[in-house]
Length: 210
Image 1: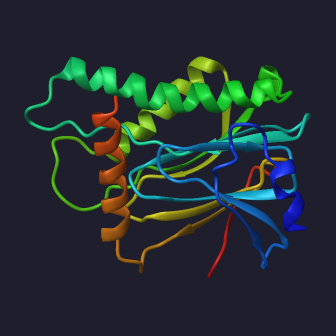
Image 2: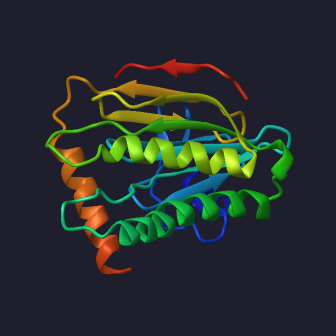
Image 3: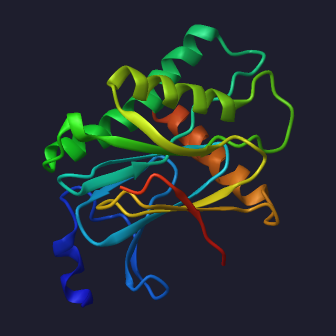
């Protein structure tokens, strides 16, 4: 089985970690902050979210889809508003464009695309704006502009989340991690955002347990 795993991956996604999920008896690809992944295989795509947003987009007719994982920068007292807008274009627009264009390149049709959106939690600390809420507003506006319907979402709140998405069917499973310490998630998102600054189907959401 493992000898053929690389043959199942679209070019450009060979570095995305994939493993056999015993619970679901299928392959699972893990998407970390700043990454995205598409597939037409019977597999799940997994990610963990705090303030970040995941847009799960798929074509239910061609049965191809994927998800991204991005975070807009938080506005600090010293930030210039125009700089923040530039960051939003660089981070959010890039994440959305890359995911959508990859799905279209794999045979998806824009008129068929549907979306589910997750994340955007408010995690710890005080800030001038809630970066999670900014992420939610951004992805909603972006998808509306692109004419892609959001058929389900689980956003906001104070909970980190785990998301599993099946790109062929659009089925999504989400778990709110209310009992899990948020420090690791906050650290992962900060490291991701700092790094970027330096380098320039089923309409229901199924809750799942451990």
